[in-house]
Image: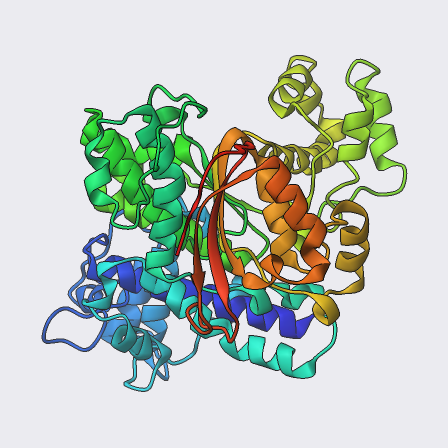
Amino acid sequence: SQQALIEEAAYTWFNRLCALRYMDVNNYTRAGIVSPSPGFTQPEILQQAKQGLFDSDWQLDRKRVAGLLNGSIPSPDADQEAYRLLLVAACNSYAREMEFLFTAIPDVTELLMPEDLLSNQSVLQAVRDTLTPEVCQDVEVIGWLYQFYISERKDQVMAAKGAVKKQDIPAVTQLFTPDWIVRYMVQNSLGRLWLLNFPNSNIRSKMEYYVSPGEPETDFLRVESPEELKLLDPACGSGHILTYAFDLLYDIYEEQGYDAVGIPRLILQKNLYGIEIDKRAAMLSSFALMMKARAKDKRFFTRGVRPNILEMQDVSFEPGEAKAYLDRVGQDLYTLDLWEGMQQFENAKTFGSLIRPAIKDVPTLRARMQAAGVFEDLFLSKTNEKLLKVLEMSEYLSPRYQVVVANPPYMGGKNLNGDVKAYAEVQYSETKSDLFAMFIERGFELVKPDGYNAMVTMQSWMFLSSFEKMRQTLLDTHTIICMVHMANMVMGIAFGTAATICKKRYLPDFKGHYS
């Protein structure tokens, strides 16, 4: 729809302008793309263009820009028009390194660029005023800005009452996690696992919220190197949990003697994973991790490494398409798991990480299909494209992580729409009263035995009768390692909340730490 197109263009440019400002302030750009040089008011790239200086890597009609700026090409606002061309060229140049945020701009998005970019009242000036050098010390600021950006839409949806529409679920459920809570959860899950394996590690001194075990533990996941660690945030938002996990992992790698320049690449390739239903948040989460890596490695943008952030996408097959496809690839690859898996993701942007993939061993299936030449068959290309997305989502949703850490969405009762209610009734009978409880249940499925499931949620699961079966299952099959029970408004909402770290193993004699 027209409104959806306008909204997408608006948040795309909001994300880009904020990202470019952050990179300018931290000197990750060759010249200020949205920021002026000291003593000037116009962006540095525009000032340089007036002197005939252009970035040699940019695909840009230099003659037109020069003509606009020297007056040989008439324009009602030559500076504005020239700057728009420069800004598009800059964004397209970053598409090589960060396609999730700077994909080559199609005409329609370019046309919907904010009109006034150079005046004192422009959105660009507002971005510069907000993203000062002081606040750009930490990439978390992008997440705070995003929550502010969607807050008005959240208020509108909640004021309307009743079931929340599919497209509004992200706005209603996004909630930025305070830094100390992130640290508490990551330190007592990822940090704890590392210390169990390497008890002499000095990272203990860097974990101010770590709760030391009261007595030695013998049942724990064995890891021999930091490269084996896999942490998932199944509702990653703008990436706050993942960016702190990056910091802790960096300290772990450094202590193990890894080459400093190579550490960011290893962390993004091997350790950190995020899943998100909201395209906007997924963009910012990927950007945040790229910035963490760039801060440690000046040449990181040239490494060809991309964060493991999965944006869930609705994938549906036309009537008869899936069967025709499987008939064509042959009986060797036609399995019930594959057939069922191809039907599972029609509402992926609604159910997100709650989907339990039917395809159990994605790497083996993918390898078999490649060996059979399925992905090279031009007649199957459209269906292959959809199937590859199904395989990617299925693999992310497989139980292959040692640690899950999340601030999952909160939504229950009257706000759950019909699709979610029906799905929860069948798939999450013990936790169906609220999305956060379903995520707690799902978190245990995503980690390996002896792994950690750390989540900050509303407190209601501890008290209400509707969660009685959930409590019983949790206490009978898992172990609460530690918990912080918090008062109203600690998380910015008028309800009590709790950050809980659980181990996927029943330890009947274990005494948890509660505060």
